[in-house]
Length: 518
Image (tube, rainbow, N blue to C red; front, side):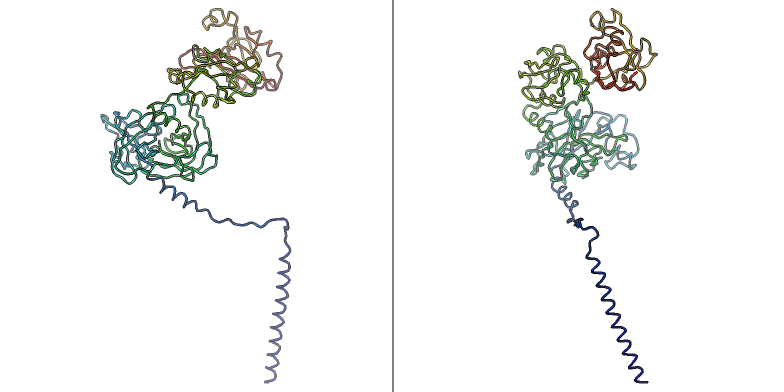
């Protein structure tokens, strides 16, 4: 019996040993198989070290909080005007949360005969001597402007040094007993779409609120004629009423813009905010602290920001600024610039776009005589022009509007382009100061036609097509009959009311003739 158990023990040991050997051999085969790469030409991926963005934002907020201020304007109005859309902070807060954290009367309406009202905005210190940059609309119309520093309950009365309505910028100054910390300025021209953007301000009166996002677009032109110089940085960093005048920062804590407005359907943040680029703001600031006002040049022409390439091709240029209209008696008119000229150089600087011309002219002091090169009939011509004062030239013409000129039954002769036109009487031409036989009136525009795509309207007067004068309906038919699909077509048109005063103005419309143009 004892021998049996000893034999069994030996068998068990041998079996276990055999299993260990087999396992080792099996494991060896698996390891050997793993050494054969499935994708030998693929490089291994490596996980980078974590980027502590939260730490960067925290550091940035602590760095900037002492430099960002709350601006309160007292106005002799029934209701304060907020930074965006006209809502005061209490009203906006009540709308969202049903209460007023600013000592108001809850859900009740503002007293009907309240003699004063307040609006809250933001600003930032740019000079240790107490100079602060904010928006003009934050202080516009205020009888008193007060500034609150971060972690300081004192309200300092501010003096308005100067304002720039075109850029919506204001410079104010306080005399505090504490040491002020100015912001560090950045170069807004170096900003790229996709860069981090941080906004700091007092939305709804809530001091030192920090939001973050990215730069969504650069050079955004909102088409506001009163602020034609503005080319905004667009951001999705949350900006709300009360953020007006606060700084927009890059990830290094440098101010790259002044938060100015939002696009919204609700009156509050909708993901689209706009900041005045710092490079524009600095130019205005330097003039304001020197003279208390901003002076800019102008030459008295009207042009479209986006000109169709077909129009440029018809008039013999690839780039430049196409002159739609010359202000009578203005600097360009006195220098001999004509309608349909193409400005290619101003003061010896190349001009490729409307922004090029606008910024260069605006930076040129009034009274300066400069050379201007234009293309006329495809040939270069250099003229000498004396720059005028922008404020005087634009006075009374800051709010252009348009009458639709649409509606009613279409009459007249149908022609190509989806238009119907009619000849004009001698009295009609005389009233428009046209030549005896010049122009035909548009009596109808077909839906989804080439003419409609170009923006031509019923009531417009066509003066020329592809630089050929139009004196009659037959002229339109003759000129259009020579055009084929793919040809560039440029119309010279007159329209009433486009300057907001019911006067007639000339504009140009151009496009490529489609395959099935009626």
